Length: 112
Image 1 (cartoon, rainbow, N blue to C red):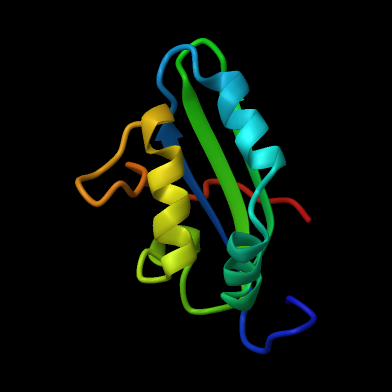
Image 2 (cartoon, rainbow, N blue to C red):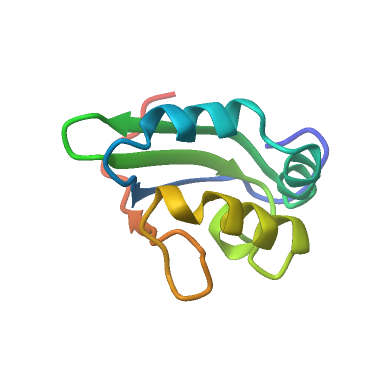
């Protein structure tokens, strides 16, 4: 459980798709993740958040622990997240609202 929040912690994983040739720019932008986005994620109970890239397919695999009610992909009502999605939209497959197309993944195994 996240030390700052009560409730049950859950693990979430999802995949997204990066456009060809955008890997380094995607990595660079995330290395400089805006403080306002970090704050929204943390206040939402999202932590231990990692994103991995399958270089062959451009598939991004994301994993996060969530202590709040929703994961990062559910925070589109937050202004900082809207701005971040707009900033990232040229690099990835997106929905009409510029949110990344994300496909939830079902956990099949976990070992603590």
